[in-house]
Amino acid sequence: MPELYKNHIGGKWVAAKSGKTFENRNPANRNDLIGLFPASGPEDVDKAAGAAKKAFSKWRLVPAPKRGEILYRVGELLRQRKEEIARVMTREMGKILKETRGDIQEGIDTAFYVGSEGRRLFGETTPSELPDKFAMSVRVPIGVCGLITPWNFPMAIPTWKLFPALLCGNTVVLKPAEDTPHTAVKLFEILEEAGVPPGVVNLIHGSGEGAGAALVRHRDVQLVSFTGSSAVGREIAALCGQNLKRVSLEMGGKNAQIVMEDADLKLALDGALWGAFGTTGQRCTATSRLILHQEIKKELTEMLIGQVEKIKIGDGLDETVEMGPLINEAARQKVHDYVQIGKKEGARLLTGGTIYEEGNWIHGHFYRPTVFDRVTPTMRIAQEEIFGPVLSIIEVKSFEEAIEVLNGTPYGLSSSIYTRDVGRTFRALRDIEAGITYINGPTIGAEVHLPFGGVKETGNGHREAGTTVYDIFSEWKSVYIDYSGKLQKAQIDNVE
Ligand code: NAD
Image (cartoon, rainbow, N blue to C red; front, side, top):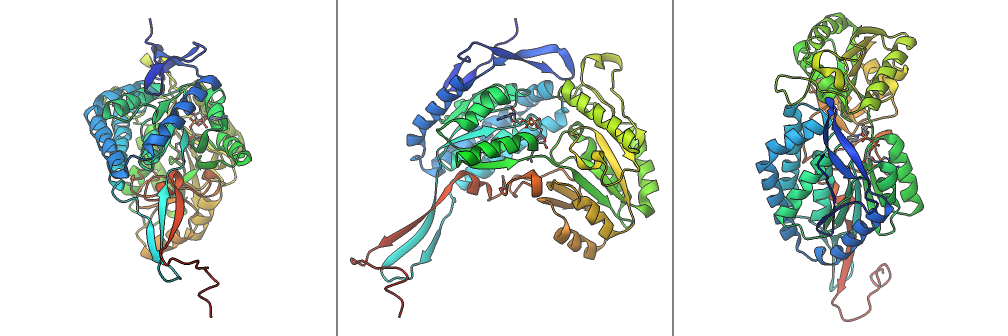
């Protein structure tokens, strides 16, 4: 019998009211059934939102430093169980152990970073324009937050949202992706053990349409924080707009790495390999376009293909494997469809472009790392998010053309340039349209104490992580204390 997992509502593990479940299977081997998870619907979301609303009245009054101390305990427990959870994560979503360990480390870093904010969470004090009057601003919690997360960072992304939400005094309902429910269960085991009070955090499993949409619509959910595809983000934004809910969106990317003729080519090669094929290309920050100056294009392309063809594909639980499977069959089919589109558009396939079904891997969603050459900036494979191990090489003649090509998509998440020229470095920092720019580093590798997010169609103006995340999860209140003992009218009494 497969293991039966539950939702976590009001401090208790409970099944979906309908009794329905869905399967979670290992993408490296579909015969490996991890367990059954509740297929929740609006009635379960309603219970979870109700529990969160009830818990809010007490949690908002817990001093922020105390809320931070609970997060330290969460960080400590995550550290103790890092290896166990990394294995759970690799089994359910396929990325290699080195990367799933990194994903959990991001959660640990966030716990300690955000926990320490409990003793800051600063507002401002400022002189009043009137005598005997005091003025300051303070952060106040918002209420019940609905968090909706994708499968590619099943620990890091939920913790990026959940920990700052809690620190600011909100309560939470999390709806994780249906491909990675097991990692979310592990996180909730830890939150419970660390002493987060019942109802402050609630977990609802299920599909986007069944559980996610109900969470967005729920009248008691005041804030929605979403990370996922731009298509779903648009729908959520429209719903939140109609109901005047606060909404933060982190969505897709079409990230590029530029390599100029003066770059250290070995360094640029290492960056491109890690950026394009890490997490099997399934990162929002993955390098999808490699923009090469014509003078070094031939040399770097040859170096790249030599390395790409050596990438060891397989089950991420094997420490020697370098690239795991795609998350599910639909994702693999999407990648394969884009490869056909690329060929039809006239790009030249240099390597890969086929499903990988050798040896033991017939039951997994494996795909060969793929590189296209002679890609032009307007081709669909250079414009649309493929979300797989497909890299498109675009040749340019100058620095200016490189920046123009990099900026020429609707997205603006991460970006990278390899050059030794200081002037170009600063021009790139100024002119690249992206939320994140790396100089002489790949497009991936964000750190939790810096703002994370993108411009254009990647986001809606918010930044997670850094000090900016608290602006998502708290409201500003301005406070005036008049101790003059008389009515004082601002802009009137003090004007000659
Ligand atoms: P997705 O949009 O399909 O799903 C994301 C989440 O939304 C899941 O939990 C899903 O169940 C839920 N959902 C789906 N439809 C919904 C609806 N109608 N209402 C409410 N919730 C709904 O994305 P995915 O396939 O899980 O993740 C891949 C995408 O996420 C890529 O586009 C990637 O670029 C993006 N992503 C962005 C970032 C970032 O920080 N910018 C980080 C990671 C992933």
